Image (cartoon, rainbow, N blue to C red; front, side):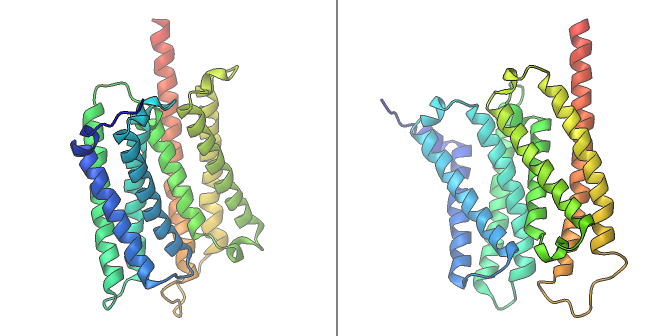
Length: 287
C-alpha cells in the first residue's frame, strides 16, 4: 500500500527542492526559446539544467510517495550527493553560460544566467541544511570526504570531456595519452562509486580500501603526466591568438589544462586521506 508524506514538501529541504525544480525548468526554458547553438558548452549548460530539474523532481516524487524508503540503497546519502553535484554543476554552468552566450542585448540569456546563479545558491543551501541534519550521524559513502572527492574527480573529468575536440588531439600521441588518462580514471572512479554505494565491496576477496588506495596513487601519477604533457603539446609557448573569437578553441585548451591540474590535486588529496584512514583503522584494531 502506498502512502504520501506531505511533510517531505513542507520541510525546509523539501521547499528548497521545489524552488530548485522550478528554477532549473525556467533556465532551460529560457535558453530553449533562443534556439540551439552548436557548442559543447551550450550542450553542457542545457544538460546541467535538465539533469538537475529531472532529479530534483524525481526526489520530490519519491519522497512524497514514500517510495524512497523502499529503495535498496542509502537514500539520504544519495540526496546529499546529488545536492553537492548539482551545486557544482550549476556553479560551472553559471560561469560558462554568461561567459560564452550572453550579451548586453540578450534578455533571455541574461535571465537564464541570473536564475542559474540563484539555482546554485538554492542547491548550496540544500547542501548546508543536509550537512547540519546529518551532523553527528553515520553517513553513506558519498557524504564522506572520500565520496565527495570521487564526485569532484568525476565532475572535473566531465568538464574536461566537454572542452575536448577530436581535432585537437587526433594527430598527437602525447595528447592521445592525456585523453586516455582522463577516460581511464573517469571510468574507474564511476565504478568505485557504484560499487561502494551499492554495498558490493564485501564481495571482493581482498581489501577494497587497499585497492582504492592503489587506484588513487595510479590516477594521481597518470594525471601528473597529463598535467605536464597536455599544456606542453597543446599550448606550447604560444599565447592566445589575436584573431581568437568568442568561442575560441584555444580557450578550451586552457580549460582542459586548468581542470587537469585541479583533478591532479584532488587525486593527490584523495590518496593521502585514504592512506590516513587505513592507518587509523589499523592502529585502532591493534589497540
